[in-house]
Figure 1 (spheres, rainbow, N blue to C red):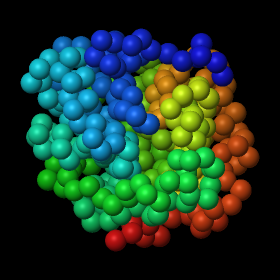
Figure 2: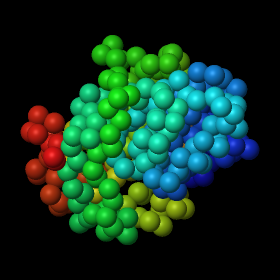
Figure 3: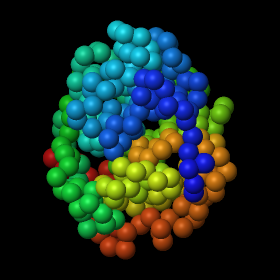
Figure 4: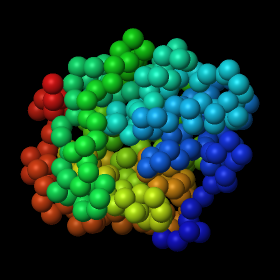
Length: 284
């Protein structure tokens, strides 16, 4: 893939706008997303980046939606440390509900930690350092709400959530049929996240979920195949740049078809022994 497949226009608030009501903010190695037209008073924050990013999110939100205008809700694709780093601080300050898949609740209500990462897979400095990453739970139980069973996304009309497990047991992606926009979270990403260099430079290319934190490769494969069948026009992922168009769709189809060869590690503790919710994958 090439730079021409990357989409979005940089805004003065630091976000990259990919639709009139959709933008993302790069927070070091990860993205947070803003849903809502500029100036809207019912906007939604999707994911909250790593620890220490609350002020950057606040500033971008104030410039995009107005000073003193909190989101109507926070929606999480999953609860890994790089997606919930500012969650507790912002949710308490804004006093807003936090929506996530019910299977992700143990990692968001303080009751369980994620399985340990596997630094032996994927190569690269980020993978090597993964045992140092936080995996313990955050505790936002007072504000935590399950995503509706009917597949709707609260306060995001026209969007639906799709259960896309593998990278985590309760991972979800968000889909809007009207313009075929996909917020994929870490079901797949558009950079080689295992490499610190790639995470910084963000050369545009499709990859499976970050290997060192993926605990069920069979489910991850099926999730990518599910998303490929949607034939999205736009894809925003948790890591890397947003991409759109035929080249992105073709790359996603290739990833889905060749997932075992190009995405699944040759070895590693979770390839033959996945950690699944029904197996008691919450490490207490």
